[in-house]
Amino acid sequence: MRIQDVARALVAPGKGILAADESGGTIKKRFDGIGTESTEDRRRAYREMLFRTKGAAENISGVILFDETIRQNAADGTPLVKLLQDEGIIPGIKVDKGIVGLHGAAGESVTEGLDGLGARLAEYRELGAQFAKWRAVIDIAGDDIPSDYCLDANSAALARYAALCQQEGIVPIVEPEVLMDGSHSIERCFEVTHRALRSLFSALLDQRVALDGCLLKPNMVIPGKLHAGGRATPDAIAEATIRCFRDVVPAAVPGIVFLSGGQSDEEATANLDAINKRGPHPWAFSFSYGRALQAPALKAWLGSDDNIEAGQAAFAKRAKLNGLATSGAYSASME
Ligand code: 13P
Image (cartoon, rainbow, N blue to C red; front, side):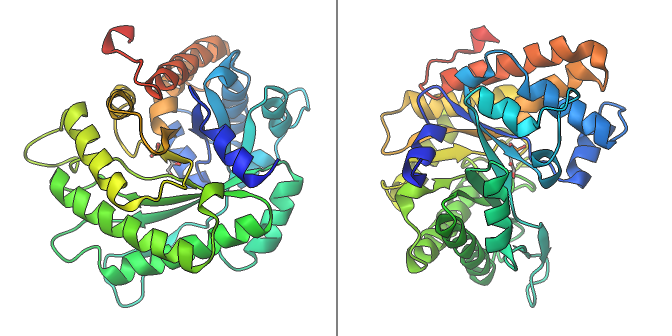
């Protein structure tokens, strides 16, 4: 398939992406939360449970994997990638190597992983990956963070990654995540997200990335978790998010797939739904959720093979409700 077709398939109506690409440290944190030791076998068991969920492909177009998972086999020896492919779910791979402090910019970071990336992408493609993800982390702190320097350094790396992906025939998902951490207002999140996206699309165009062959994975425009005014309504989030994206995201981009970034599972669904109730939009608005798709499944599973059906039911429910939210057809009464 051409990258343009893969990108469109990932945001087909009613479908979105499962982000199951937690690094070793992050999956340990999630397993700590349910009192389960993070061993290779338990990570395999957990992800196998998700990937074997019956009917998941109705609402899940693709899954982002971590390096360990793309090489791992199910208990019966079937490669986990093959479980997905057999259901018509597109495998993807996280390729960045995490963040490091940005030189000369205290408190800011840049994402690493460009060295040797072309060769790694070629190997991942052999292993079945048709799309990739790279996450830049943008913190909001006080009036001066993020700096333009931080935004531009991250955009340059995202664009270089995207160019390498397209050279290898892989769809890049570009993720400039403005964190929800902190006490900032929704207006401040709007301003920073707007600047981050302007910087990103300028870099993507400079590096000749085909916008119709990539997907954007952003935060919603939303107040910080510690904002004195509390949470905003789905309607307020939808209004600010759409206004921001209409300003700076070219219509050639086929889809915008949100991260959940610390929203609860129900919030993330309600907010996506509110955005799509205000459609039609120039792009498909869908999801690439990690925590918001997995939190109830983790809690139901609790690390035990006895709870696989309960975990799958919890995951299937979030997938279905988020699928409905891609067309604004969700309502809270379905919870
Ligand atoms: P969350 O939805 O949990 O934010 O994870 C999505 C993701 O892939 C972040 O990089």
